[in-house]
Image 1 (cartoon, rainbow, N blue to C red):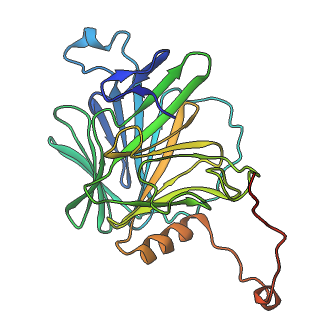
Image 2 (tube, rainbow, N blue to C red):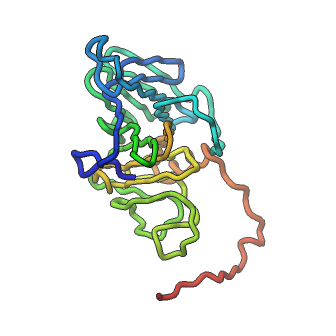
Image 3 (cartoon, rainbow, N blue to C red):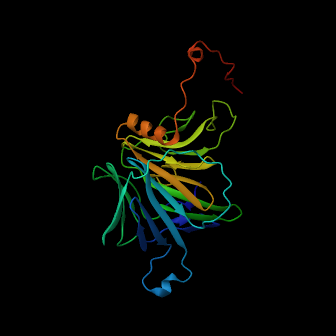
Length: 279
């Protein structure tokens, strides 16, 4: 879903709340909780009427880092949920005057404590992707309700693939992909098997942990960013480091679950009644 009108302006009827800075950081042994106001706080008066966003960082598995953005918490849990496998103790948190960092194997998430908002992901100490200023937030859309969104940068020559069964171009850059299963045939942008997961040729994948409708803007709202948004007051996604596509898929399926091996007879000849015709 697009919330902006071009690069500078916000769509009519849309109110955006985005983290302005990492105002306070609480570190546990294996996770970080960051409190980020929507406007920078220079003195106590700036805390009045200043919405607060909560960003949590943790790791359910080695070289997998989760990000959870919450505006209002405590709503009714309507489900359903993906069942995820987690390995406690997969990360280490560290906080100093310069930054708050969560490290899981060769993957790290770093939030500067000075200046504006920035969430950087590093692999082997090198930049991988980031959620820059204006890259996370909540949107109130007139007549439609609340949404949360996240953006991750796309580098020059970086290509995104995935998002489940698709009948459009294999490279998803420039596409708007609304993830919601639909029986619309095999010649449209709608699909039968949508999956909120993509990977890129930079060596990482992104899994949005929500089985409901997820809208993806892969370089289509902002050409150098991939955006994912969904209804509600909370968004959760995981950055998965490979660096090879095989390793990304292995870690993704270890997190979300793998199917049992089908019986031998299912690998034999099969016929389909699917067909295409011209209208």
